[in-house]
Length: 373
Image 1 (cartoon, rainbow, N blue to C red):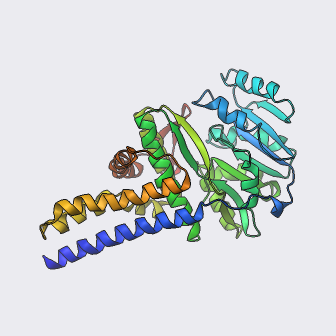
Image 2: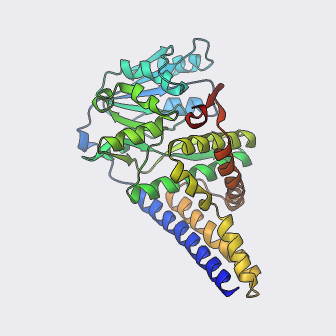
Image 3: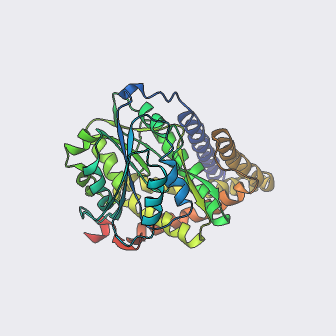
């Protein structure tokens, strides 16, 4: 019995140590840095934005691209269907901000099962600049957006990207999604970067055009169903590193349906399992619940189960709250409740990632490569 309690205690200590360490690393990794774009001499940059349908806060996110404090850039909007309801909005914004060079390209080039990748191919080909940003339509671009990306580029960089930071949640489900995006996924991405295991995130990606073109352009990202996984592997094969912009960029959420949050997380889980199965296997330990339960069981033998049951989550979620507040991310008094809800969902999402292969993305029925083979 003593040995089993000792093992449980060690497990609890390791769980807390890993969590607190990742939080500290994330805080150090996502702090504001100097944003002068001197490292690539402030060249022209083409921003390619795939758009598909009307989303929450779409007008604000698309408009933000016209308001950048950068001397030389162009916007290229890509839509794959002529009847897409977002087309009038894009054209109206282009007319209102005619001083910014912008184009709308409509059509689809099928290079992979990934609909977003098929949508951006025409924009990549049309880009006039030697530096290209692929940016999702729901990314909010601050005035120094391009400076932040450019400042992260260095001699070892093969790609600069940024995880999305959930903001402006319109309901409880959206707050839960903030919990997934911010103090969970962004935390781990910045912590991994600090440890030398950086990986790409497809929301924002700055490429040197020649680097990708020598591998066939966007077609090179069709090796994986998720273009960011393909980008990570390509950059590593070239002996380069993925760099992260700091601080990261917001994704305003609005109201969400909890079922949609679940499906989105399961989709990403299946894609991670497909691309990086070993790392995905370790994700089961990232929820608070294994350590929390072990702490209660171990403390019960000492008659202090209740204090430990309170102290463990206070320390765990207190660290997340400190990270969110210090980073300027969304946090309220009910955030710990949404983080607990997230951690309740995580084991079920992890299992679903292993046992399923199909998902729907933007109305497209898709299947991961492992199960389709």
